[in-house]
Image (tube, rainbow, N blue to C red; front, side, top):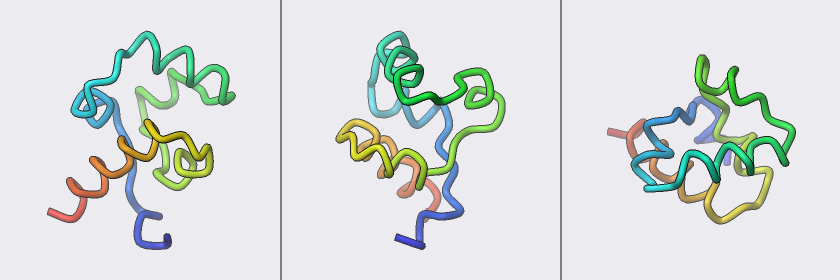
Length: 69
């Protein structure tokens, strides 16, 4: 999946996926991700894909589609 390497997922992608930010923040913490860093800088799509989580994959797909346009 090298095509998504340069894709950065941001909060707008989570919103487009219509995910609850409180739930995402809890999930983020369980994954050991830094929420504040994410809000400031986004996160690599690859890092989210590594979790194998279906919701993370949905958010990455949204970010990838935006990136490709």
